[in-house]
Image 1 (cartoon, one colour):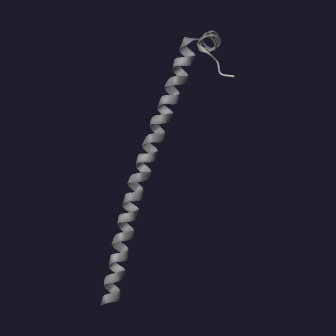
Image 2 (cartoon, rainbow, N blue to C red):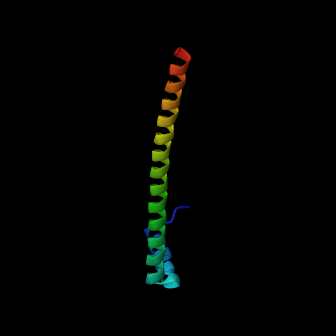
Image 3 (cartoon, rainbow, N blue to C red):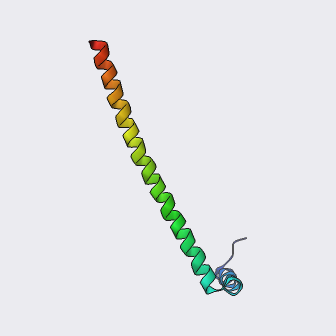
Length: 69
């Protein structure tokens, strides 16, 4: 059972009446800041992963040189 356009409109009006305009905009701002923090965390993890992989590559190359000597 999918809500049609009228059902969505009634739900939106009910939410607006229950929570008020200020509360809804505040919640949306909190959601947006949470998404930004999540994206920043994902970028930090990718940078850390790149650093770790570079370190592993350098370490393995050093070990290969030691074996050759």
